[in-house]
Image (cartoon, rainbow, N blue to C red; front, side):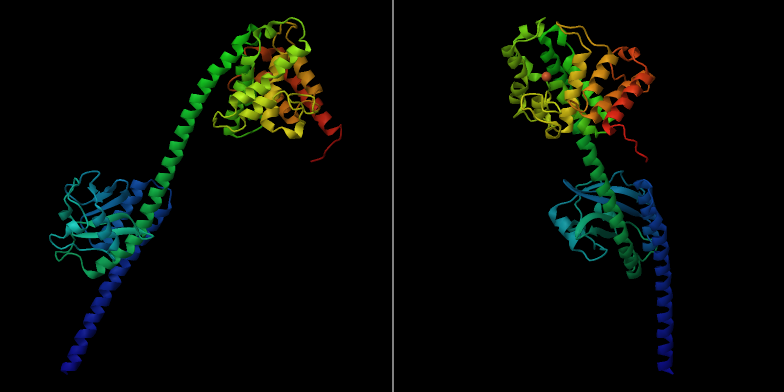
Length: 431
Ligand SMILES: [Fe+2]
């Protein structure tokens, strides 16, 4: 009888415990199912953190809860979200010493710090008293501390029981991952934005410095004023029409600015000559490519192709150019683009020995000289930009002033068709 009473009692107790555990399990599952969508949707993190807080409150039976993120440089906890505390600074900051980090990392599951033992886990140098927290659940990913869930007063008078701590422990794995993902995303975003800023400041610096360089190169003679700046702009425009990447376009602009840097060493008198250059003078002029190459080699630019563009922008597809007599396949696309932009600008600009060519005549001549001298894709890019100018679809004009008014879109189309015809040798392709 006693035995049966005992076993009846133990059964009832067992059932009660099971029921209690079941309820707790149910509560945790509910909390997790609430948390799941919050963690996986593209919501902003404060919203996710609030959802996590309420799940933690429910599962652990806490009235007060705060979620801390951990950063190791400097080593501190800073609150991400808090609920229930009457006075909780926003953010609450708790600096950690190595012994605190060690205490938190070595804990297996949630900690109930005894009176006077808070110093094992938290310093009192922050803006919140560690004694406020009755329970600390370290958040770890891959053995590394990523944050802490700290509970204040419990809903139950008796404080937190084992079942609640178990539920808390279970949830903390998910909270740790969510927090870690968030800080990874934030670090990545921060890095990308830092790099962008650095690039922008670098490009800004180079752009303005190189513009000044370009102006200095062209100061030699009134006939070449603005030439390098225009070649930089045309090269970037052609690159853009060819759908090159932003970095390549920036490189083209800078290379265009600098392509004639070797001209600083050429006798100024040669630029004003109204007759053609003799052999010796031509050699001196042609040497600006080699001199320029010497100048820029060894200067650390963010774009590695600048020295070869400076050296080879007078090379031609059929090998008739200088200084190295290279063919089309021997020079990279950026060199071909700057070479084309350079020739195009020279054609439509006045020279002491000739009048400027009209836009239509210059383009016809370039198409005629393609592919023997120029790259067809680059010439096509040039035509595309000019066509956009003629129909007004360029955000900022490719050509200076109203130069594009001297040609009709249909003329450009005609030139593009001629170019296409030359490239396919009149064959028709059905696509
Ligand atoms: Fe040149």
